[in-house]
Image (cartoon, rainbow over the protein chains, first blue to last red):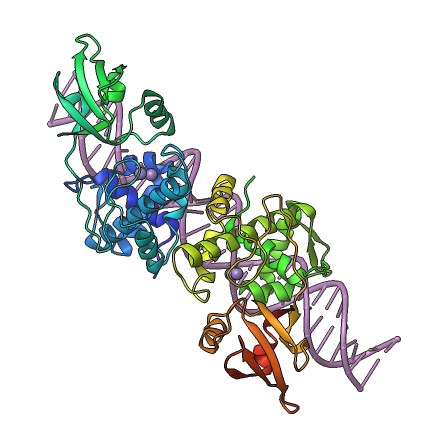
Length: 220
Length: 220
DNA sequence: TAAAAAATTTAGACTAACCTAAAAATATAT
DNA sequence: ATATATTTTTAGGTTAGTCTAAATTTTTTA
Ligand SMILES: [Mn+2]
Ligand SMILES: [Mn+2]
Ligand SMILES: [Mn+2]
Ligand SMILES: [Mn+2]
């Protein structure tokens, strides 16, 4: 049988909160992420366990089964491919696409996803730098640094963001920090950990710790 | 407030069954079209009337209000634009797109629709020859003939289909009858009203009444 | 125009996904 | 090691959208 819109969202969120090492996700964390109450989460967990999509023992938190992981990754694939479509083909900004992709990711049809993927030229990353799982369900997270881990004098490439909030992305737009930009850390303020960063060999900007913590970068 | 997926479907179906002259639609007709039971339809009609989307008096059938008509036409616009996208951009056949568009038509976001429309080059017709309402909600049904109304010797242009079933569309594909094809009626069989029709000045085909009744054409 | 047939609505129930309040289990702190 | 605090589950309800069966209204037929 098919999974509902809601079930797919739970699986996707469990995947995200469970992280690379597949750690147990708590009921409260899910309530927070789904904007529901803990009691509602418990109901849904019983159902997902029933369907063999999660490992669930009362009071012990949950992880995805292989079957649940497969579903989650399919949803993530669709979400990210649709985001590429919205930005590359329809001309949306990277700050505008998340909510729409949140709906599109639940459209069924395997063949739609594969045709969309081909139409987009089999992209490997979405507009936020997140990797797109392949058709077989392989998802490899590149191991990027966070800008706070970069030392003074280093030049790095901007590869992605941790925060996907429109307000954050718009802030980056105004600062000229886009995917692929070269960031050179020139100074780090001892007191508040804010940094002076040179963008693409051009202007130097002051970047707060709050921003640095959400920038994924790569040494060249 | 937003209309649900289900409410949108009811409005779209009432629009279709109500026709150009806005005739009353019966409960049973809606039950048939929505694949539900009459009792369920009655419940929904009370709700839609409550929201001011339909004119409804018990036992008297329903029509759309202006407000309901507006919603219905927006859904139809989205459905047909997505069908164009699926055929023109993703390479689906016209027989494959209806069910997928049935889902995509409920994705909210005005701006998405308008960007999609621009991306597609503001198409006027969908892959089945159905007119696409404009952004303001104007929908003008061209007045086509049905092939059964065409006399022997006349040449007409194939402009659309009444039946959207995949099996019918695939049958047309196998017969070489596509949108824009020139059909010349050469003979009409007295007994079963089947016709000999020459396609694009090339091969002549026998077409059953069942098929003729579902072909929309235009004199040149 | 009254009886029969058909269409429609009402009554009462079900499921999915949510809720609040209370109970139970686990974790933390003295 | 208890007592307290926190987390999670259970119990009991709600709403949207569906159902079946029964009642009611409208239409058709004789
Ligand atoms: Mn996103
Ligand atoms: Mn993204
Ligand atoms: Mn269609
Ligand atoms: Mn169509």
